[in-house]
Amino acid sequence: MAVVPLSWAEQPGDLPRQFASRQAFEQQLRQLFPAAPGPISALRGGRHAADQRLQQIQPARYGKGRNFLQGPVTGLSPYIRHGVLTLAEVRDAVLARTRRRDDSRKLINELGWRDYWQRLWSQLGAGIWLDQEPLKTGHAPHHYANQLPADVAAGRTGLACMDGFMAQLHRDGWLHNHARMWLAAYLVHWRQVRWQVGAAWFLRHLLDGDPASNNLSWQWVASSFSHKPYLFNRENLERYSNGRFCRTCPLAGAGCPFEASYEALASQLFAAP
Figure 1 (tube, rainbow, N blue to C red):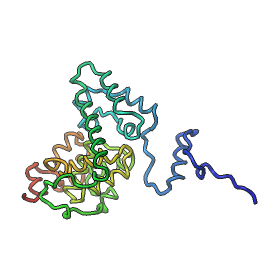
Figure 2 (figure 1 turned 30 degrees about the vertical axis):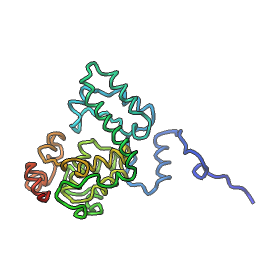
Figure 3 (figure 1 turned 90 degrees about the vertical axis):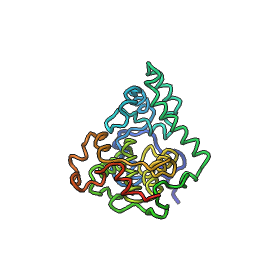
Figure 4 (figure 1 turned 60 degrees about the vertical axis):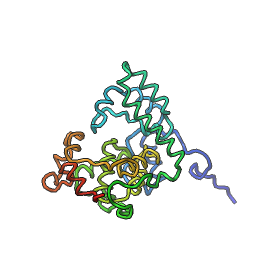
């Protein structure tokens, strides 16, 4: 009886790391994961890509413009998430590119938050999937749905901003932090979905997703790990997205659910204590 040699995919050990081209790499991924939806993210992995990103950071500009979707964010989170870069390496690079200590304060602070989330995860373990505090929305946990709405799963809510964020999430596996906050607030507060559902949804798509930063940030939005729920309105979204979604949104007139003051939105979305 002839012995049929195993293909590399059937052999124990690491998967191949060298490919003739990006196209060959993408073809191999599609063979390995035929059920994975959407295109392969354009984000490049590896140490070389991480070092290029690291050399491009602008700490002073980051502190002033990081909340804008087109602002000078670092794009380092996928490399930190997968251990290509350590927080200490990023910290040292930030300080080396800073003339005044105040110019690096905001970026160093964000690295500190990431370290804090990781340390908290090491203490809580699977407990990060549980509410750390009671909700401050006036609603009980059972008030929120246990599954993702069909229109959200399909990225077809009719809202140009939310659908745009979801398209980028599915296409790139990455979102600006402000877009993540808006999308999380929309799902939890406007659509009344449990934050755990949203957190699991993000982890299925984000290349930089890890349970620590992801789950505890969702809890911050939901108010189970903060003193109040996070909200936004159209004015906030327009300002930090340069109005690019509202200009094309069919609901930009009378149908926008975000067109109100924060006080009016809180009265509409939350129950009286």
